[in-house]
Image 1 (cartoon, rainbow, N blue to C red):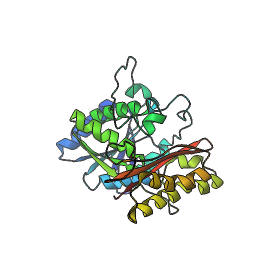
Image 2 (cartoon, rainbow, N blue to C red):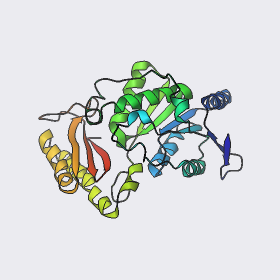
Image 3 (tube, rainbow, N blue to C red):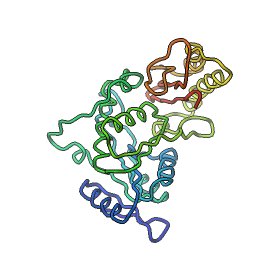
Image 4 (tube, rainbow, N blue to C red):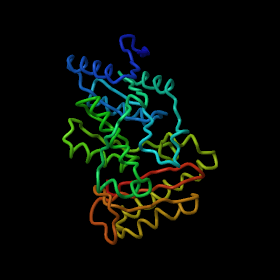
Amino acid sequence: MAQVTDRRAEHVTRLVHESSELRALLDGARSAGKRIGFVPTMGALHEGHLALVEHALLSADFIVVSIFVNPLQFGPSEDYSRYPRTLDADVEACRGRGVDIVFAPDRETMYPDGFATAVEVSGVSDVLEGAHRPGHFRGVTTVVAKLFALVGPCTAVFGRKDYQQWKVIERMTRDLGLPVGIIGMHTVREPSGLALSSRNRYLSEAERGRALAIITGLRAADAAFAAGERDAQIIESLARGPIEKAFDRIDYVSVADAESLQPLVGHIASRAVVAVAAKLGTTRLIDNFVLGD
């Protein structure tokens, strides 16, 4: 077990690789009356991830951050092999925010030989990302269910940039009766409006400028909704217009029910999410606004 001392002399951030050690440390924390906060990540941490840690500290006093690039949620033509892996920098960032445990298991720890179990959520996972990335959410829910089993009762914080992922995990947790409170935190953005993402590091300077078409489209849709527009097709067209001009490929621009994520046609009766996935070169970006939020 490696240890990294925090700026506060009495605090230590522990880097843990084995599930047995994780459980032992968490058992000790609970015995001491600590409330557990959990932030699952794939690493390459940025200020958006660290904001999740700070939010977890509002309701918990012992924080676990997991770092695991989950192979099950990547398709065969996706970027698993080149996904950024920056463990040393990630541990240092966690140390600076008072994280107690960084859990960084290897693939064999999470999926030992003979692993044959999957967790799947129907309905909310079938559209948007689910339709364009077959098997993606099956991989997400399987790994998150296992992480929840390892961490145990806790409050888990997720970013709402991955809005559908948040809703899928919320549904899984509720349906299985897991002892985990799910919190969705608003998207953290750069001053330009670009949503923070580990994949932003793939963008060239020119592509970063073009990527702002997403926030331009989302803001146009949000402004129209705030002004009273309720036609889903018009809202979608306003969001799509700038993105079509700037991006190389659009997977979807969808106006959907904020809970079921089913596409809306005609009048928007209540809260809706405008969700976007599009590519610049080989980099795929997602974002969303919740109308009426």
